Image (cartoon, rainbow, N blue to C red; front, side):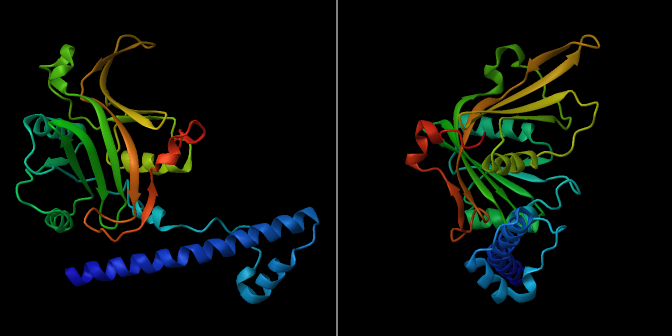
Length: 289
């Protein structure tokens, strides 16, 4: 099984190494096609590239933008329901343990695992052996949940989020003693318009199976200045025009700060995106919208 994983990882990395070359050829085709359509002369550097590439630079109008490994990561989404494993950092506090239990109720088809003495490599091996699609690890600081890691198997990506303003279910006073619906929820995403926003949106929405039309459960991810507000509601129809919402909880704010092109235990994986201090200027503050 280990040899198979090594072979699959090697094939994945090799495919990624060819992506940039294919994208450059596609971009040159588009540039030459645009110049010919506008009746402008082709620059000398593009002529040299066309001679060097030879037959590879055929101008096919029907050719679409080349696919990437990012497209392959969730290519099977919708064909099967996700299986999620939820765990915590070692020696969790009672509040983090309670938060992990509530997160298990948020994601359908999820299982909570007591961390114990398991290493990250042990968790990754268990996920692959049991056909787990995603691993969620919750962290804390002095008893307050402050981070969440979402790792997609078998090849990534891994998204790292900071958590803030965490409110547990029993702290939502109106529904502290209510039960949680097990219906597959409808999803609402607001202000995820950029390329990075679409990337984060894809990683989050594929954690949930497809909901039925009759489901009355709603999960909301609302982005405001790169802070994603998560809310969990159920609703009932009062009339054909009105519905009544009831917040179930938990609720929290999350902010992505790193995306890796690999699973959690692969420390050598490439960093696709990371939040830098200079990105906090007013001009660059909203990167997800």
